[in-house]
Amino acid sequence: MLIKRPSDIPSSEITPESVYRNRRTFLKTAAIMTAGTAAAFALPRFSEPQDPHYRRPPAGPFNTDEDLTSYKDITTYNNFYEFGTDKDDPSEYAGSLKPRPWKVRVDGEVEKAGLYDLDDLLKGISQEDRVYRLRCVEGWSMVIPWLGFPISVLLKRFQPTSRAKYVEFTTLNDPQQMPGLSRPVLDWPYVEGLRIDEAMHPLAIFAVGLYGKQLPNQNGAPLRIVVPWKYGFKSCKSIVRIRLTEKEPLPTWVRAAPHEYGFYSNVNPDVDHPRWSQKFERRIGEFRKRRTQLFNGYGEQVAGLYAGMDLRKHF
Amino acid sequence: MTSLTRTGFLPVTSSKYVRFIFKPLVLVACLLPCFWLGWNWYHDNLSANPIDDVTDTTGTWTLRFLMITLAITPVRRISGWNRLLQFRRMIGLFAFLYGTLHLFTYLYLDQFFLWEEILADIPKRPFITVGFLSFVLMIPLAATSTDRITKWIGGKRWNRLHKLVYVTAIGGVIHYLWLVKADLQRPLIYGGILALLLGVRLWYALKPFLVGRMKREGARNEVAGG
Image 1 (cartoon, rainbow over the protein chains, first blue to last red):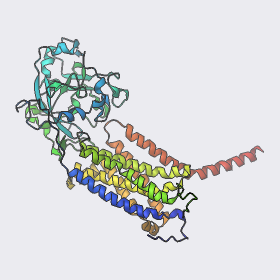
Image 2: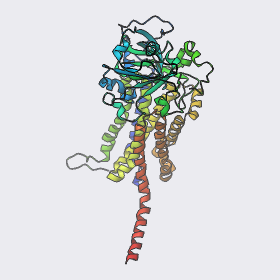
Image 3: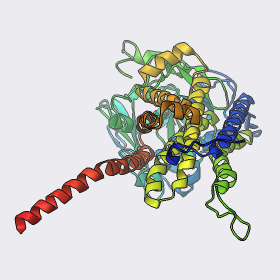
C-alpha cells in the first residue's frame, strides 16, 4: 500500500502508516474475539458431578428438593474475610485454621456461663441433614446440604435468663490462624446477632458438617450458624463465643455501613441494597438469574416472627 | 526510511521492527486477558460464578488499559523513547474494547437485556451511573481514532477532545471504589496510580510558570541582596 505523506504536516501529528495496517489487524482480531467470547457465553456450563456418596434427605419443610450446588462450588466460592476478601481466598488459606481442640465461651444472660470444649458441647446431640437455600447479599445463591442441629437445642442447655432477648455470636479472631485478620477490612472480631425467637426457630441451626462430612474450614469449621431466611453474612462462622444479651447486638456489617446493612437482614426482593437491586439472584451453576423470594422462600415458616414490623425500616 | 545496516539487519528501533514485530506482539499481549477468560471458561477453571469473573476481568482490564494509555506520554517524556507513542492508539482502543465487553456483560449476563430494569438501574445506582458515563465518554475517542478523522478534525482539536480520557479514567476508578463492599485496597491502588499519572501532567503543565517565577524571584533577590 502506498501512502503519500505531505511534507507540510509535522511528523508528530501523523501516525505512521504502519498503524493503518495495524488498525485493520486490530479491528479484525477484535471482531473475532468478540464473536468468540459471545460464543463462549452461549455454551452451556458443564455441571459438576455431585457427591455420589451423599444421600439427601427427603423433601420437607426443612429440606428443599432443589438441585444441590456441587461440593466443589460450595467449598471454593466463599465469603470469609478472615481469610481474605477474594472468593477463592478462604479455600486457599483456611488450612491454617485448627478446628480442634475448640473452646466456646458462653456468657451474658445465662445461668450456665462458662468456657466449654466443643466436643463436650456436642455430646448427646443428634445431628440431622438440612438442605437449605443460601442467598448472599451480593446477589448469588446456592443449595447446601448442611449437617447440624437446631440452635435452640444448645441454647436451652445454657438456661437463658428472662432478660435474654438477643444472642450474639463471635468469630475467632486469631491472626495466626486467619491471615485475613492482619488487614483492617472490617472491625474484627466478626460479630453477628439474632433476636432470641429467631435463634430458637427450628429452621435456625448450628452446622458442623456439609454433604454429610465434617465442615471444611473455609465454610466456618468447626461450628457455625445457618439462618436460611437471612442473607448469608448473618450466618456467623467459626464461632468462639455465644453471648446472650438484653440489648440488640451491633453486627460487624451494621457497624461498617449502617445505611447498607441492618440488624435483621432478612432476604427481601423489595428492599434493595442501596447500591444494587435484590430482586434477582444467580443460582451458582445456572446461567439465567432467578427471582429472589421473600425470606428466601421460608416465609411460610418465619413471616410470623416479623408480624406488624415494617420490613423496609427494619431491613 | 530506514536504511539497511552493513550487516543486512535493520536496527532494532527501526519503524519496520515496530510495525512487523513489536506491534503484533503488543496486539497479542493485549488479547491475552480475553484468551485467558475464554480458555478458563471452556475448561471450567473459573470460579463457581464465572459470569462474575467475566465482569471482574473485563472491568479490571479496561482500567488497566486506560492506565497504560495514560502512562505512555509521561514515560515517553522521561525516557525519551518516542516510538512509544505509536502504541498509544492501539492500547487506547483496547481499553474501549474491554470496556465494551464489560458493558455487554452487564447488559446481557447481569440484566439479560431487560431494558426497563436497565434504564431504571443506570440512574439509580451511582456506581453504574459513573461507569456508564465513563464508557460513553470513550465512544467519541474511539470514533475519532482513525488518521483521516484526526486530520479532518485537526491535531489541536483532536488533542483537546481526547483529554476526555482523563474523565473516563477518574470515572472508572470511582466506579470501582463505589462498587466494592468493604475492601478498598484495589480501587485505591488504581486511584493512586491515576493520581500519579495525572500529577505528572500537571507538573509538566505548571513547570514553565513555576520555573519562570522562581527565576524572576531569584533575580529580584539578587538585586535586593546586591
